[in-house]
Image 1 (tube, each protein chain N blue to C red):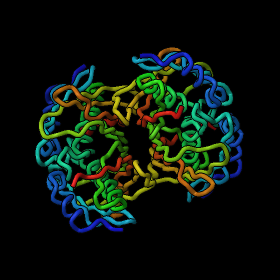
Image 2: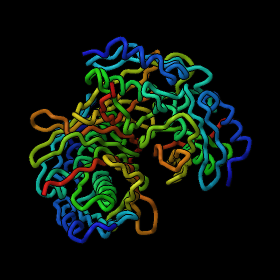
Image 3: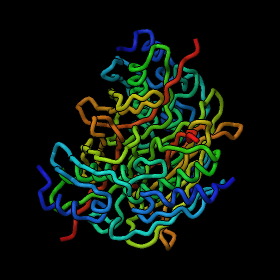
Length: 136
Length: 136
Length: 136
Length: 136
């Protein structure tokens, strides 16, 4: 199963993705792939990416990995997430991959990893999502 | 002890705070107080604030609560954080308070809470921070 | 509201509480209070309490704080928890207090804190619980 | 690199492993493998394994995966961990595997997964560990 193009386009049009330069490239049963370009607007006072920008990237990567495994009329909401920041992220591109760890009828557990261009792991996350039916 | 005005101003000038409409109001030994205005750019595909925007708010609230308890030449970095999203956040103002739970020589543990105007808790977090000396 | 004596007694009789010397002292709308005696069986290879024993204490403190806020025929299950270990715990008594942060119809978020006899914080936690009806 | 037999034996002799029927089978550069037998002493009031017992299993699996990647005179301590409980665990055997996600000079991030005999995932975790030199 693969999230259809319209679902991905809908997410790529949402406000947060536009504001933070976040883009979902693909999402299917194997997981999701994202790209984000870190610019001046992402930086904290020390000159590297603020945790919020990376949390947004990994939350999105986990959520879309979950959505790709659910029915087309289902959505999901993040109950909670935990993120480890393992390397400071300078301006430039960062990529991320999300995957589902366990898919329950009500609860999905997912993980994600953000990577710098050279392959270094920038951040890792694990999160809990609740499934819901979108009203037609 | 209280973070001096210049430290707060430095954070309020950083890119991420500008991009996401985030503002530190105060930070002293009792904790930090923040305000963020959720606008179109904060929204996910379902029309409420994306987790990344709230994670950024709570990460900032915890970090500044920690900074207010450290020496003036010290900074801190988020090792990891966990956040629970307890209520969808619509466009408008959200506030947050951060506080230090334990202050170690190397590691600080902090928590934060984001609140909607009517007093409802929107998100709660707990995080781990490492202290470092800034080079002069 | 207060968890009645029979509910507390039922937990104090369960296997895990017996095995790890864990005891719920009280649980009411303000939270729960626990005591655990750390003995040789709690220790890891470095001679202080293993993380599992403290995780058990704080999971229990959060769960009973939640149960005290729910209907008598409701139980709860831990969806996930996060724990920070802030001080090594030597053999002897450790106490803990749990409290509810947000009480939803389906999801409860709680926190807990474990303290050494001198007042030092040994560990802090935050967790997510799901409510369910026990079959009669 | 592989944790030598004496290191594994030392852990298998510690109090917590004995109390909770926890055993490290192997630990090398690919990760750690554990086994735990859930008995009456592991159960909470609903008749399945208490979260503390599974938290102990996964904390151990992550810690030994980290130790297998460090120098022989190094130890590690859990700064914090997060665990998702995905399936109730009945009495009987449960296995776990731990692996290192990022190995820093001071901080190690690891994950672990506990599995029931039929292959179902019982719990997943992510944790942060600090490295230290043991005194000779």
